[in-house]
Image (cartoon, rainbow, N blue to C red; front, top):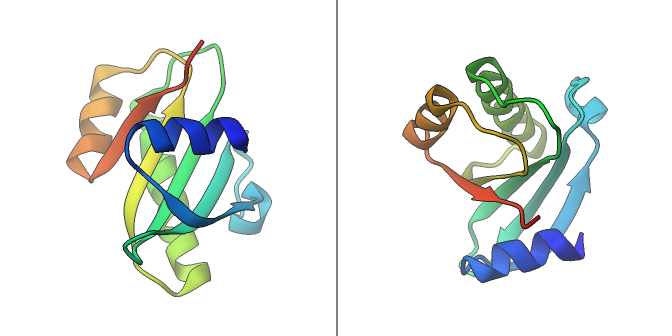
Length: 110
């Protein structure tokens, strides 16, 4: 989790509290790390960490948005900031779709 906090801090995102959520709690079989927290300005945030070798496709982006919706329902809160931290190649259509929906894309350091 330290690596995640450092990557977010480099982009100016500081969370007072950051907790991990298991994907199976959101009825997902994706191999992704999910974190939710409260930022310094009292907004809720969500960070998805994806480490894989194959390309992140538009289908994956849709699944990430579904995970976001399920987490909002589970927490009964509006998550304003959404981050995808990744180290895989990203399809341009997936990147455009995520940015269009307000996601911030942050590549993980190698």
